[in-house]
Length: 261
Image 1: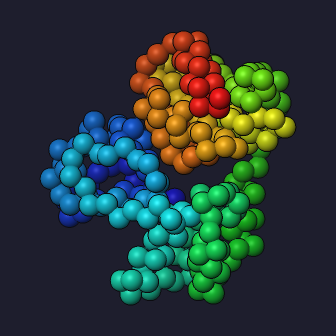
Image 2 (image 1 turned 45 degrees about the vertical axis):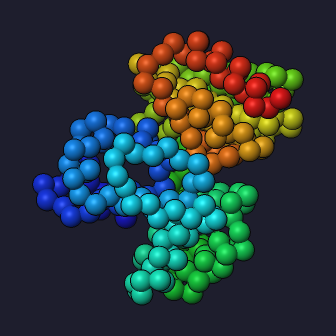
């Protein structure tokens, strides 16, 4: 469905719906350009994050922190409103749920989440085809595979091995980020090293610095909040508009130590 996406706000619209977004920071550029127009119309947030940063204007919030994924909440809304879910929509909803729950393996995934996926399969979602498409989309070019090895060699283990930390420099991001997010390449491997409780990737986009956090304890969102970000207890992120990556690294280590200890 990506071919249906556009990056230009239409001249005329009646309603804005924002899904699965932890706060204003994740849509900052959009708000900088269009906040006045967006705030002048009804603005609905459909989400499942338990802790979220409010937007700077009135919104109509449809939030269910008990849902395993926003895709699950969308299925519930469709049922309440009598909307038909065809096979294509069912497949897209399954992809959304599986992505957000890492294949139904995160703590947020509940029996209701699994039942929702089964119901969508009954409506025509092809789980095998969805997984094959995921594998194909995630296949690495040879130079990206080599980059992954280099990044893993640069990972630091701190706080008695509880923190796995990596800083990705501007040159690497300039070369690879448009093709593959370096954080996505390695953060899962960092998280699952024995003894690691929190994995953090710092990306120097200059002047912006972005953080990706994954945790085996519910500390990721708390660390991210210290930098203006947020998300799930075990998967969060933050964007710092400007800063020295070395100084931010020290702050990340200090905040991680505070949360982990």
